Every structure is written in C-alpha cells, then in structure tokens.
Amino acid sequence: MIIRIVRMTFKEEAVAQFLKIFDSSKEKIRSFPGCQHLQLLADAHSMNVFSTYSIWEREEDLNQYRNSALFGQVWPETKRLFEAPPVAHSYIQKIKLD
Image (tube, rainbow, N blue to C red):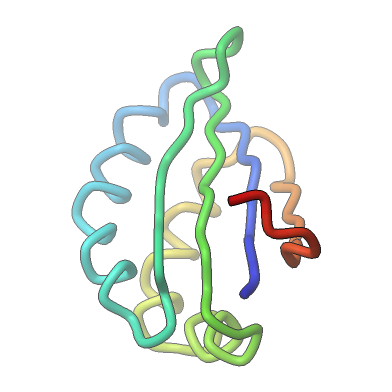
C-alpha cells in the first residue's frame, strides 16, 4: 500500500477554479485501478493551500495513474494555478495500528 500526499499552494484567485477541477475529476481518480482512497484536505491556516491524500494498492498503480490520459488532463490544468511548486511525498505503512 502506498500513501501519497501532495501539498499544493495556489494563487488566491485560482482556488475556486482548482476546486472545480478537483470536483469534476475526483470520482474518475477514485475509480482508477488500484486507487483505494482519495481525499482533499484544506490547510487550517492558509485558504489557498490544499493537500490531496490518496491510498494506492501498489506503487505501480500510482505510476500507471501518473502516466494515464486522465492525469495528463488534470495535472496540467491544476499546475498552471500554482503559486509555488507542489511538494509530494509517498509513504508505506510499516506498523498496522488496528
């Protein structure tokens, strides 16, 4: 399992447009093979900072999404709205807490 967190800082005037992009693509991403979860988080103190939190069955699934036509459509639309470069991290769960 791969947990992917991408922190994105948007131009303040572009936040509404980003939210539209996310809303129109979230179900397509969630139904992509290997995607177990996708959530959008808003920063508690900065109204123009958001993070996506996604869980993928395997790193290969995440990479297939990143090489897909869907990503090729969503990411360029999103990228042009950034105020700063995004920061992405991938994690694996080492200890099961349940």
